[in-house]
Image (cartoon, rainbow over all chains, first blue to last red; front, side, top):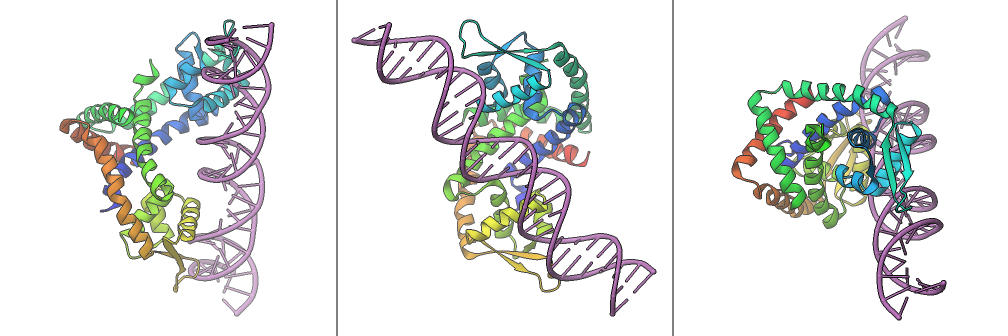
Length: 142
Length: 142
DNA sequence: CAAATTTCGTTGCATGTGAAACAAAGCGGT
DNA sequence: ACCGCTTTGTTTCACATGCAACGAAATTTG
């Protein structure tokens, strides 16, 4: 058995390489980490979200959410209000500046992703999408 | 645009979930990290390898190789000799104990991977394999 | 052949990360 | 109302990681 023909290895390498290319974009443009990018993504597309919602929808744990949100707050891209009903709960909002940066960043990230995907054949792209969808189910549920 | 329908996100989540399941196996069985597992995999299937070869074939940089190899050496799974021709170069070998553990571990890791893959349809499996192969080319070369 | 340069592996440092401890707030039973 | 218990978010601590500096060995250059 060779490592480079071992499927789990190939999947990991492919995914890491792909992810790295995208990270370079938001890292270089606005100095955002992957966690910050994910939170900003969600908050730019929702009025407000709590930590629990952010955590569930980003596969980040509460510590990662807490720290990434803190950094985004420091950068003025989001606000962290305390809930009126339950004073333990944080309610996160995207600031106008956060929106502005996200609107500027998403096309670039997407273009980078599409650039790589477009270098594949249409058939391979379709296969990848189908395979990842199936894997998502298999790996998260199992 | 929703995050959970954003392809790069779905790929990352699927890959991480898959990888995590496998990590649990060699982590639990012998306390190996992903880097250690990769080095052991290569060395168990080759007589001897240098740092450069290990680095290239694991997508790890020289620091990661150095540290992972040090830990594997401490655990008695590999040896780190100094090359006769070039005294800067390390030559790594797998010990009998390293072989023994690898032979014991690979079937378990593979079974875990196959378990997840077998929960997918044959068609989805084929699509995934085709897609990942294409992505590997697109993401690493581009 | 001596000095400068390059290569290889390791180490120090500054930062990031995860697990567990923690404080604050809410909940619940008596 | 009070004492315990749970939940929420943060902090602490120990460890991992990446980058740059480093020392040793080899190679190149004058």
